[in-house]
Length: 243
Image 1 (cartoon, rainbow, N blue to C red):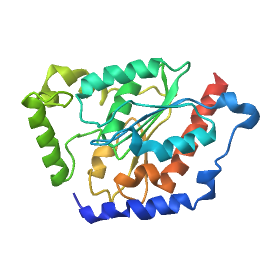
Image 2: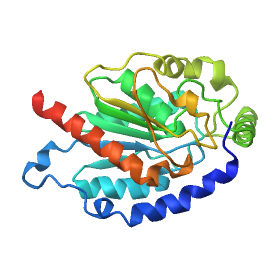
Image 3: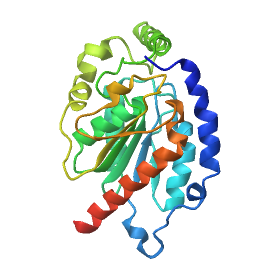
């Protein structure tokens, strides 16, 4: 990991810059064409819950999207079980949705897109180690191992060491490498100064790679990410109109 952990303190300046961006408060709204907006499913990162994506959810709603969150309070569950539950949430939308996930949530978003190609209109991963889920900083890796140990001894709701190679997550691991639907845009956002995840592990070969300048924790409040997301949403809406 090249970036020092102190780089993650940039979250607050990133958030501050976003709050001074007029396009954040008044995003382009469809008005007469409100039926063009895709619904969106948001999935938080490791050790985070839906509250961590509140700012992003608010911006999406101001833009005219129906937004649903994952129902995850703390993203430390077995990926195989979470994938099944999120698939049910995805099916509840009346039409194909855009799925956005941060960090570990992005690996779940990517797997959802591969498992449900007819229900996912576009997918965006934010600093998500799709190529190697353990390509993280030493401190985060210690936390992962601690959670797995607690799961091993029977604490409910946590992933275990079996999840890495066992049957419970075999489909999830396969889906991280499976092809994605060609007409559904996919974007993998990464930062070379990410101090939590090795940026190289974020370069999903099935997605368009977009580099931003910022921290790992701040990706959901980074103005540059919102610009990238705006373009992705527009592409997904164009696809909807052309079908």
